[in-house]
Amino acid sequence: MQGDLRIVGDVAAAFCDVVADAWESRTGEVFTIALSGGETARRCYEALARHADTPVDWSEVRVVWGDERCVPLDHEDSNHRLAQESLLRSVGPVAEIHPMQCDVADAYDRLIAGIDVDVIHLGLGPDAHTASLFPESPALDAPADRFVVPNEDPLGNNPIPRLTFTRAAIAAGRTVVVTVEGASKREALDRVRSGEDVPAARIDRPGVVWLTDPAAAGS
Ligand code: 6PG
Image 1 (cartoon, helix red, strand yellow):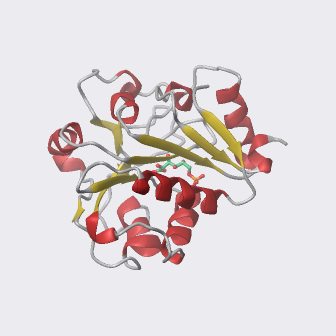
Image 2: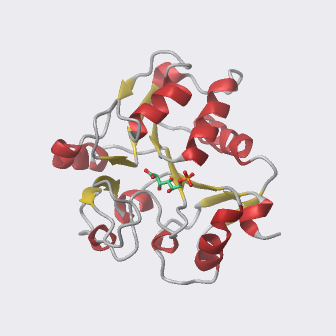
């Protein structure tokens, strides 16, 4: 397991601090954040929206997604909708917003390949997937020059087709932060920590930050 495992009482608050630190150390005119899906992410974004005192000037932020379900943007399973509900409608206008849509996978790949992503936010699934890199899925072995690819879950645990960042995209993030909450994630996190070859263990980014609560960390 690469990176820095931080066991914290409030994962969402710790996530806000990681974003604030990344903002303070930004080097470009536009600050790019790649959002995740899932309920842990929702709690993180609601906290970000509440922290009006965060240093982030959202009018200078480019919003992209690290993965998305192949559904309409207003669908209840859409990560775009999740971000709109939990964060984007609260922080006012942003510099750029780039929804992920499955019919333009190549264009999204080129978008991400051409920018620096300041923060990549990832979650951890109970099957130890991250983004939409599912166990035994083809996207795990995407070519090194691909940053976004279509993917599906061959084991059927996540039935909706997806678009996802690849390992190369994740490795290129300036800050990569994984948020993990709850006892339901303990087995998956244990598998990552034990060095088992699960998708989340393939996050190839030395400085990756793991924010986890005691329940998931088993402490
Ligand atoms: C998705 C997410 C996925 C998620 C994890 C954790 O689109 O489903 O990107 O990788 O982050 O499955 O989700 P929960 O926080 O809901 O457990």
